[in-house]
Amino acid sequence: MRLERRSATSRSALLLAPIGAVAFTLLVSALLVLWAGAPVGRTYALLLQGGFGSVFGWSETLTRAIPLMLTGLSATVAFKARLFNIGAEGQLYAGALAAVAVGGLHGGTGFEWPLWLLFPLMMLAAALAGALLLLGPALMKTRLGVDEVVTTLLINFIVLLGVSALLDGAMKDPSAMGWPQSVSLQDGLELGRLIAQTRVHTGLLWGVMLALLVWLLFKHTVLGFDIRAVGANARAAAFAGVPVTRTVVLVALLSGALAGLAGAIEVAGRTSYVTLDMSPGYGYSGIVIAMLAGLHPLGVLAASIFVAGVLVGADTMSRAVGVPTYIADVIVAASLIAVLVAALLTQYRLRWK
Image 1 (cartoon, rainbow, N blue to C red):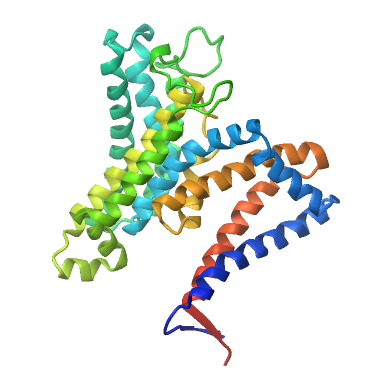
Image 2: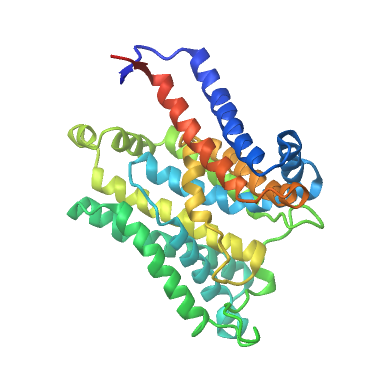
């Protein structure tokens, strides 16, 4: 068996590929649901109802989708230039700590500066923290040829150990009754509610705005062209005069900044303080979302809502039919594999020797 590149990709193939991917995902998940002894139809109905069937379901889905949008954009920017950033989880926590350091320490006064100045400085500090955390691996890749997958992945563990030390030390909230959490942000620095009596906050607008800006960057700027050129073929791009090292460094700064902002927005919009379990793997899920979206910034919005809806709906489904919530992880993972295989088959055909 071998893969043979198609001379052209038909529109019907592009249309049928995602449909086939969805069908494959539902089939694989249905087998696991049957294995668990639950009715497939009711399980899927409850999954959809839990994530999208009510105002509360939609509000929880959108709330969970906000950090996923930003980490998905972070992975999209990096992967577009073939800078494989696996460190968005650490960059998210670094951004969250930087936000609290600016807006919550010093007795909760945040340097006693006015809120109109303190809020943008808090967001800037979070973006810089995430950006600088990825800058080192990017420079090691371009200057020394060090694999960024390894360095960014290992930095995640270093950051989490640092977070643990800080939450039990310098940044620990003395009023938390011994619980390892940071001090809280000032009330005036928290993001407002987008929908009354829900947890949906204005971080959703940040996610949509940043997705639009990244799309415009890719489509209408010289830097966007350089990013796509480096991602397509770095040697050819360098031969054509594209500054590869500068492009990779700028991509690293932007990707890390987006992940750092995810941490700041999660703190300012939902938790108000940093804990070790603040992120249930948002940084790693961002990679899945970027691939599901085909590295398209606007597609990240839809992919984030899909993944968040599946995760939220799984809680309702599990309580009703007794299927473990881990089925949601299976659905997300199977959908990623199915989409990648479907995209491959639109460009290649299988030939049997």
